[in-house]
Image (tube, rainbow, N blue to C red; front, top):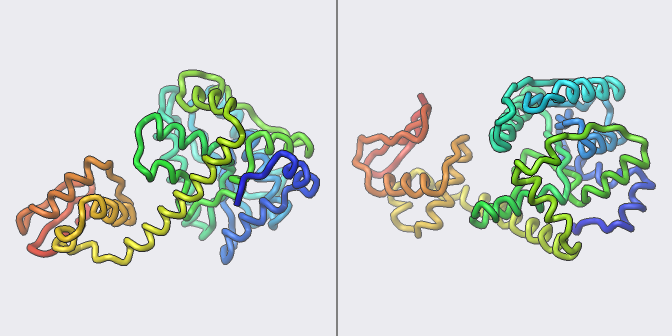
Length: 307
């Protein structure tokens, strides 16, 4: 699917962008409830309006995270709570109080932990308002920081559905204005203290064709990542002999997927060290992965031990 052009977007606005909402419907097939991640910004306000036109409002749970990072955080929460009531939707909120100096990564991890908790509680699908510009910004951040190929396959988690990735920010603004929607502005978006904001200003000057190419690259890399994850899931990942017989690069990818499926994220250097242990550790020994998980070794196999 290519990113929608401005002209096409105008046409879609006329029909209230229901085509975009259908993507969420297809993604949520077989599920009764949706968890809509709503910050109060224009992107999420547009998402909620679209969902309200496609689903029973009783089937949508509005989830808001009050990070406690900005002085306006409480006002944002009040805005989203009132908007949920206006639509007749259930509302859930968590107050994190992360403080002014919390990193984007910490805030994101806490946010998704909350969303996944709700998803499990209600057997629901998570829907977010990420759009094409969000994807380009995240790819740019990964490139600046230094990334492997997986850094180009951002926002590819299969349990998170993003029906607005075929639209740009300006497209969503157009929809919001046409439909008389109100939203909150994040004051930190104008601060150059954040890498994302600095990159956003540069990305705005990119030729539209470059943006299109980046989005196509993202789609290709996301498909490759999912195909690799699917194929590596077939391998025997507990055999020490298996890891001795394959190349290090392939072994690291298989090991990464094995650990992620157990809820354990590791950096590339950490994965390299773990791989060395798998190949060389003595039978009966253990290796600590984090404060709650250890890897145990026999002569031929390894397994995880949770504290």
